[in-house]
Length: 424
Image (tube, rainbow, N blue to C red; front, top):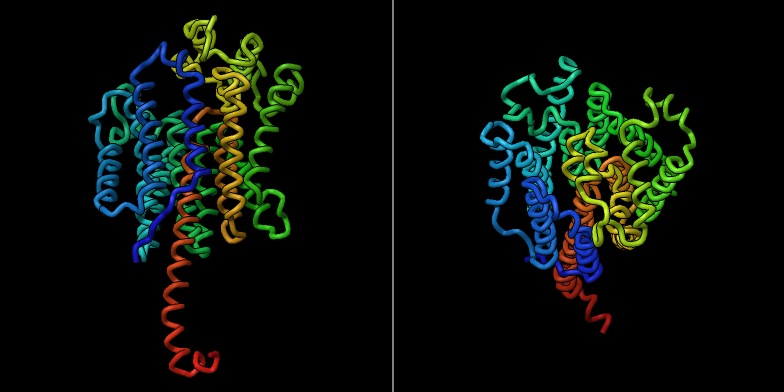
């Protein structure tokens, strides 16, 4: 029986709002368009188009999409044909995000799909395990460990870059979630996935990764307590993260808790992301309502020069906070739109979730949101949401199919036994 996935107007509005969010700060962003930026925009367009296709088409019929994505993935990891770190970084996200959704959309449609999910989960977890093991022997960096994983310009595909490695972990969580939802007994894989990620971030001493790990590990433990139900709401998770963002703003403006920050980080409170946030907040005061994306008295070069302590900041104008990024480039309008998009998505999730899957999905969702406190990767927010929607639709269609089959088989049996005639 053909499974048909009907579109949902709520999710169409959600995707359109997501597109409008980028338009708000595109004018200033396009002034320093680089190869990295171009590939990023291409990735965003492909991401949106792929999600729209998932909503409007029945399913991916060609299994070649699986072979093609896996082939590109292996060729990308184990070859040195890519000469640009910008290209490699963008292709990694392209393959991991869009490729994962394509694979999920097809594999979830298969009748016996657990073996495919287990193979892919194992593949990503092995890569993450290699990453953690290599960190033991080279705690100062992974750039010179093996030429197999290193390409030109000191750029590594999976190994060697903190953000790429953490992104790899989120891809692993993505697939682990898909597997665990299909069968609750695989929930222990999610536990070992979190443990593996913890070993890596502690060995590499990735401060932001450690924060995300501790938060997710705590949430995983808390969610295992069935009586604790407060966090079983996507909207409350979003509200909690926005509250953390407000706390960051208050602390940085009023200079509260400076001694606590020094104690926890072992560094001066004016370094790192604190300095980025401080300077961004100073500039936001002048363009609080519309941001610097629509009308920009401050040039992109001026902003990048002050934050030139990191090359990534000089290239992208990264505020290292997904909420702060919306305010900086789009003002409070962009921030409001961004929060509305998240709340719409979470309302859909809260309406259709079941207790069986809520713990697993909210743990991974919380990891995405917490990561957004120190980075601006939209993928962490939006890659997992189509999976929520698609799994729900597939489950509904399968339930309807089982009901229709049982009804067709049940009526002749009742008639043969004489129940129908008695009823008449």
